[in-house]
Amino acid sequence: MLRWILFILIYFFISFYGLQAIKSVTKNIWLHYLFIAVAIVVASNFIIQFTVYSEGRVLNPAKSYAFGFLLAFISLGFIIIPMLLGEDIIRFIYGLYDKMVNKNEGFYMPSRRKFISQIALGLAAVPFASLLYGMYRGKYRFRVLNYTLHFEDLPEAFDGYKITQISDIHSGSFDNREKIEYGVDLINKQQSDAIVFTGDMVNKKSSEMVPWKDLFSTLNAKDGVFSVLGNHDYGDYVRWPSDEAKAQNLQDLISLQKEMGYDVLLNESRFIEKNGARIALIGVENWGAGGFKKAGDLKKAAEKVDENDFKILLSHDPSHWENEVIKDKYHYHLTLSGHTHGMQFGIEIPGWIKWSPVKWRYKYWAGIYKELGQYINVNRGFGYLGYPGRVGIWPEITVIELKKGTHSA
Image (cartoon, rainbow, N blue to C red; front, side):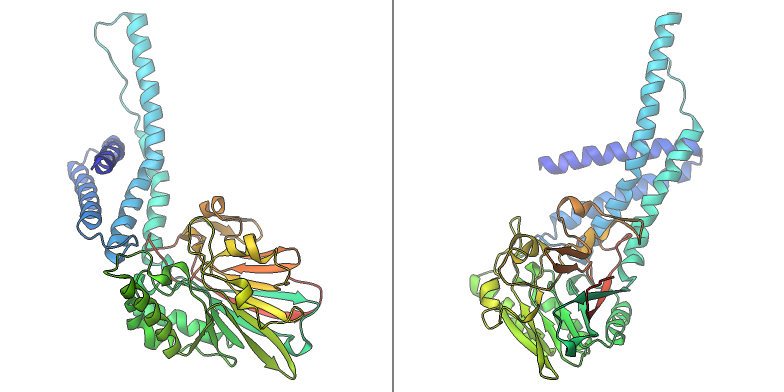
């Protein structure tokens, strides 16, 4: 109860200053009423969604949109409040000075300056519009990222071998089949030798993937489609009537992927052979630092793999690479991960800047990294979770070409 009281007080504070800015800019009473109405609707919907419909810890689409609209609305306060509150402090000091120097009987504060509110509203419109754009267009703004990685010990037969990676489908969040069809078709258009999926097919339950099974079953590559589990795939974020029901949910998801034609790697490996040479594809169950499930067993997964084999590891959480993989006696040439989503928010200008708040949680959070002669690609994710959108960090399809040599670009 206390947290809701605090929420209402903070929300009222943000709404109050937003209204003050609008009042300073326009005297149109209907715009004032409209702002108040929007503020009430956004807060009411959020409270209802998070008190009445509260199954599990992961947001369903309705709760996600309630959160998204709330986030967009309060983003106005991030800009407006510092500017108007700063102006209020100056106005108060001026009024106090005027009273003490001129010894006025009353206390007079200068009125708000219109241009300050105009600037505040103009600046606040940027994050507000960006968050709304992210909810309606950004989350389906699929992009293909191409990387070429060179390895001296890559078997000659695999020079030019292409792998398409997708991650974090989060099918329980989808709300537009046409857009998802476009994304799936884009994956197939890459015509890679293999497709790999690095975990988090659902948000909470295997049933979320059932409506999308036929669509994602169309993924096709010459050497197959391979997958591993992510932390959301285990059903840990929902209340189950029994342990048996939870275990059955996981088995249903694994069976579903197999029916879709995916080769699910559960702490195991496969070999891809070509012209008498081979590379090892190794898949671990989820292993994550910071309280996430540690079901991944790297030793077990690689027990059939020779130390001198060229190795590609599928591991959902990049913290596994940082904490265990790069320190292992085996040399894992390339690890493919996801999990971070790039926080679905940030700024990326190739060659200039790559930033997201998630960098404070994960050292390796998006793109290609190299440590101790080993590479990792952290995919930004195909779907979305929580905030129902993406701003600056767009949904990603990764295509990695393996080349024999010493130079990577």
